[in-house]
Amino acid sequence: MRNVISVHDFSVEEINDVLDRAEGMVSIAKGEADSDLLKGKVLACIFFEPSTRTRLSFETAMNRLGGGVIGFAGTEATSVVKGETLADTIRMVSGYADAVVVRHPREGAARLATEFSDVPILNAGDGAGQHPTQTLLDLFTIRTEKGRLEGLNISLVGDLRYGRTAHSLALALAKLGNTINLVSPEGLEMPDEVVGYLKDAGMFGTACHSPEEVISNTDVLYVTRIQKERFPDPIEYERVAGIYRVDPALVSQGPEDLIVMHPLPRVNEITPEVDALPQAKYFVQAFNGVPVRMALLSMVIGGD
Ligand code: NCD
Image (cartoon, rainbow, N blue to C red; front, side):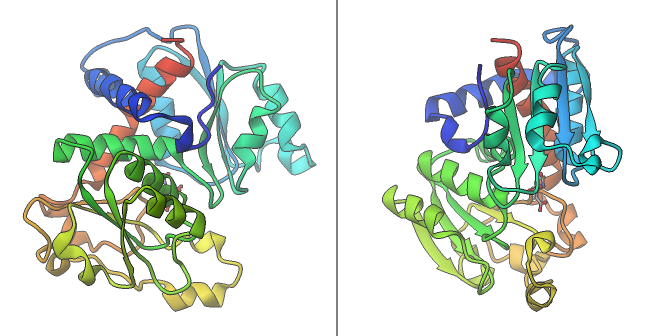
């Protein structure tokens, strides 16, 4: 049984294995080839927090591999509103499905879920913790677009304090031998624990407050949303909302082969004019969630 809770659950070799498998899944993900690899299997997607891409790409991945999907998106129509605990929900759902994808507002919830589940748990985001399956699709995108996954300069921009995609990605990229620059507003810096890991790995570049400072030496600009829902104080959110705007002028200051990524949803941190530039890779990145999650499901459920 294989849980996917943190990027630390994967060695470099295993990361490359997932990405290689994902490459082989692209034509199935596009609907150009058929597969019944997971026929008769059931995936549960239980989302205690909003999601568009993560849930739908997991569902698409499962459907394209011939499996079935159950679950909920939002707890309003579930017994959670009656006071059912996460433990009981997991105990029960794990009896209905061959794997369970969990998104939850609390950090550590996915790890906790593994204690009550008879089937693999996949963490689809636990509060401000981690988002390992997003990281795998981010890595797939970088490898596909840049042709390699080491020796790159990656600048993470935005809410590095509460942004779980940035936490997971920084750790994985450092492990793979890439230098990480951290660009965040004051007060939203990357947690010490992640910075410590980057430094120990010798992969810490620089930390600053403005993307202009790093853009000329950036291969991948990874932009993130200010995580409004995690702020204890709305006034603090207002202080930093809209602080960064990645626009064509900023992009033009980067190297010619710069790519711009974003886990999405974006609010206003990348202007719509960037969408038409060849550097914009965030919609391809969102599609890549399907083949990468197919690869993961084939390993976790398919026993492959
Ligand atoms: C991210 C998340 O949920 O952490 N979205 C996603 O899964 N693509 C990013 C975000 O919400 O800002």
